[in-house]
Amino acid sequence: MIFDPLLNSSASRILFIATAWLRGRFAKLAMRGAGVFAGVSMGVWLLGVTTAYPANIGGAWATAADQCGKIYSRRGQQVVFSPKADLYGSGFVIDDKTIRGKMARCIIKSRKDDGQQVDLIAACSTDIAVETMQFSLRILGEDVVERIYPGFPELNTRYSRCVF
Image 1 (cartoon, rainbow, N blue to C red):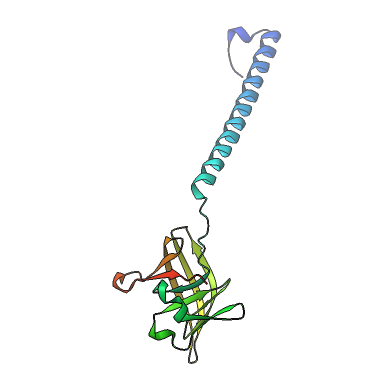
Image 2 (spheres, one colour; image 1 turned 45 degrees about the vertical axis):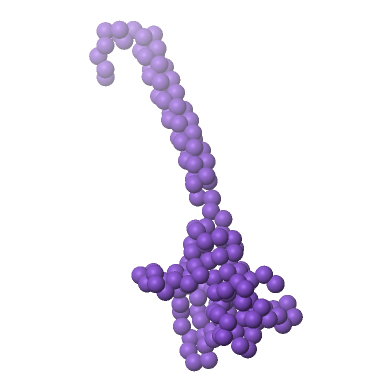
């Protein structure tokens, strides 16, 4: 029991208990309000910080945009490599979940995209083998990407989107 000369009467004890209870109640409400405010503030901040739209990398890409007509041709609605595509440059076609090259076809297994760079892991198959590969594309503009090779910058290759 707390010894306080002012709490010797019953009325004083009741007043003390009621005041303590109200203080505790208001403290809990204040803490809850501060928690809600902090949570809402953090959510708004995260929405502003983490809003990165996925890069649009779909379409046909070539090392030289002016050679697109010689590297690719159309077969119905599909863009395909022309028979002599290797003479004019290199390229690839990215559809929804596939990457097609002249020699290989890949199925995209995962994608990490921060708006400036797209990292893809794909299961690729050729006439000879099946292999899991990693592709990293740096977005340089709406219609320009660079395939990057971490640790080997001299191998980085720029590609332009082909427009048909």
